[in-house]
Image (cartoon, rainbow, N blue to C red):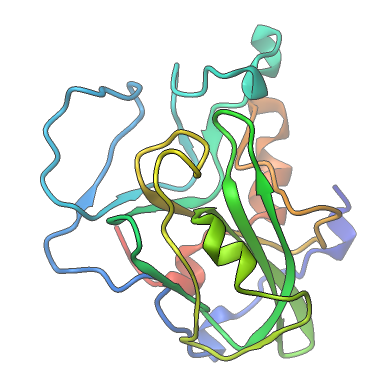
Length: 207
């Protein structure tokens, strides 16, 4: 990570952003700090998975296997649970930067990265766990406007094996491929929080 590329004290409040998923009033805010319970009763079809949250035991596929000191279980995006096929919208004017399918179990499945200019500062946004049709719907360089539908929430058989949701993550550094580390380990956390800022800065106070 090159921290010299990260704007300091950037004022996101100077811009107007669109929601990426229209949420009802009764959405749930998840707590995965004690891991994931597949048998828990969901309160709503919609929910939020938090930024900068340690999620022990949740990432168990080969993609995440590492020595204990290298375990990546701190989440650096925001998850928005929603029904399969829910439209995912651009949070701001920009362009399609990359599209792809990350097919490994536990990975993003259908993935779109968009590029945006905020007052002369470029920022990228990864949208993961999308349907494969979302990826096929775009060409690199397509212009998008704030609020445009750029994709749809994918089903478990095409989103890496997860319950249907959007993983939304910002990055001040240009991605080299259609991927970003959605989780990091403790030793990389402080740099990651600078490079991958809190998505609530553009999504609003979701929790």
